[in-house]
Image 1 (cartoon, chains in turn green, yellow):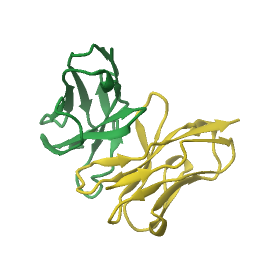
Image 2 (spheres, chains in turn orange, brown):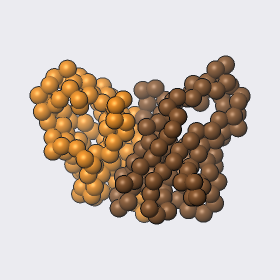
Image 3 (cartoon, chains in turn purple, red):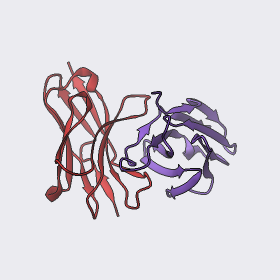
Image 4 (cartoon, chains in turn purple, red):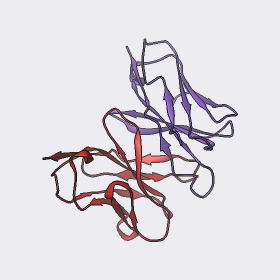
Length: 114
Length: 114
């Protein structure tokens, strides 16, 4: 079974621009979570989607948003990029049910803001 | 508030030596606990998980972890380390309210000497 895929793997943007990152979950997984990883703050939860609905959101400004499509693929968007948004963005997918918290991560998208 | 503490930022061991990585959590109820490993430039790979039952859990790559409620700990162990185990290791707890939100520790970077 194919793992979680994320595109693009690397991205360079300029301050003030916006960016969209994509995540395709493992086949059959209906939940997609997003995390930001930085050297200073570590791994922080952004949000989680299930059946096209955002169920949980971390403590990030409104510039960070996401959505999920009917095929469970998810995108996250960051508007008005700041230098501090440079990070590795990780997507994770999981089944719903008894093992719903067991998350499988993609390789991440490395975003650099200049 | 829920939190995870990994007291050791960096650990160096010799190949063939035993390994123990420490993890302490703060959580009101029975926690869902995880260990993930991240190789440079990669996403996170699930090593093992604890949901309930037997407090000694076995994972992939020869790792095991023991849940100790009295000490609020979930330490990761391996009897004999291989050079390929060099990576960063993250302990995580499933957050209250579920919905697939993980709270991560800061990570322990493992170096292995030949």
